[in-house]
Amino acid sequence: MELKMDDEIVVDDKKPEPNIDSLVEERVKAALAEIKGKLDAAYEKRDLAAKELEAYKQKEREAEIALLKEQGNLKEAHAKEMEALQARNAALEAQNLELTRDGAIKQALSALDTRNARAYEMAQKEIAKETIRDESGNWVHRSGKSISEFVAEFAAAPEKPSLFKP
Image 1: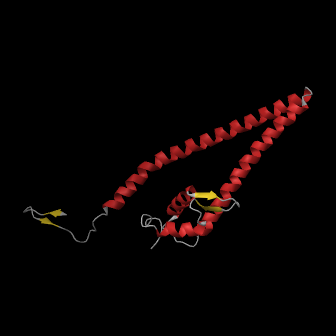
Image 2: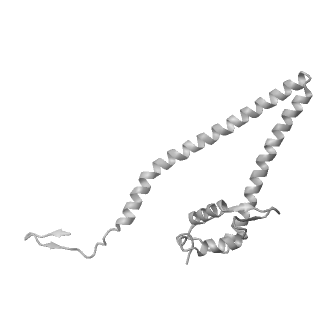
Image 3: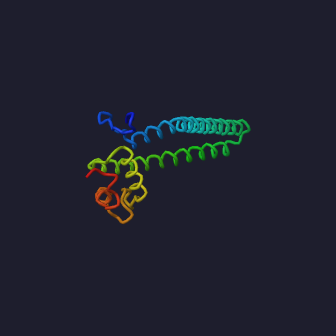
């Protein structure tokens, strides 16, 4: 805007009005960038500390087993080894189950168009919460429907329009 001598306001139509939403979004992103960097660094430190702790515990277990073997307590040493192997097997089995469930959900969701990657992740998490394994080991919805049937119903639900493209 320009002011003239006689206090008349003239609007210059050549300058576009700034988009307030985009300006606010830019400022929020700038303000959150520093916080996000600090949060990422904190998570990285936490994960590193957890890995170091697990490595320390593993060395401690191995040293205990070696000591038991040296003392001639083979039965106790083998029992400790068996416990460690069973714990590792349980962890791997849980991971395998999670991956098979996520694979089935991913396959069912691939037929649909989500709005973006975040919407895809949200849909996958919500669907995963509702799935169980049946007697034959297949992943199904709690109601007994197949995952593909449930995903189709989930996408058609009126409260989920923000996740999927029309």
